[in-house]
Image 1: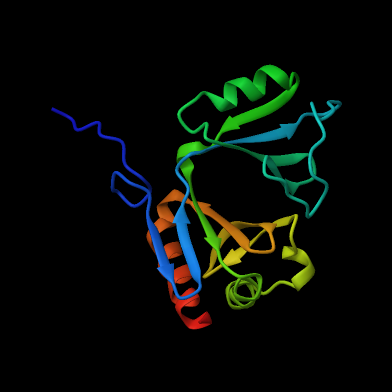
Image 2 (image 1 turned 60 degrees about the vertical axis):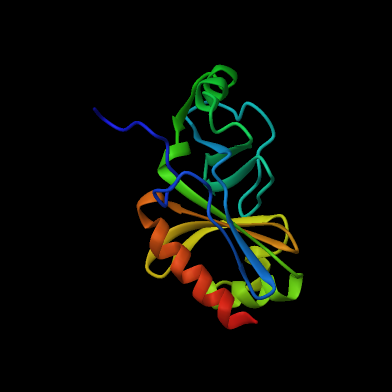
Amino acid sequence: MTDLTPTTAFGVSAPRDERHGALTLSERTDIALATLALRAGTEPPTALPEPGEATDAAVWLAPGQWMLMAPGEAETDFAARVAATAPGCSVTEQTDGWVIVDIDGPAAAIETLRERLVNLPPSALAPGRGTRTVLHHVGIIAIRPAPDRLTIMAMRSYAGSLWHALATAADRTT
């Protein structure tokens, strides 16, 4: 019989959580994800972040494209709900395709970590900002929701390598 036990991106039953000096890395398995893309002649269904901006609910990815996030709704059909409120837009379920890691700690430690992880100007990942970039040769989405938090999203198949890169950099920050 097939084992249909749900697992995290790391192949275990509980989200991964580790302390590295002043920083805490936490896998977020509770967040539902969906991409929304405008089709020709359509308008966004609601106010969405401008280029380079991010909120707790969305991050701008490209012209007319956003990643939408719903904490606490990973077990729901979030994409269907978004599609129902976004006529004429293309909505794609993304929840199981990504690993999300929140990094919490003092603002200074988060800033030092950001400098080690991505080659971006500080303004690109100031609080309230988010962007697509590259970390260790893999495309990621980096979001800075608050001065003391950095969120990194990568394709689920990159989970182990992402965690290793983040943990190694966090260990070297303290």
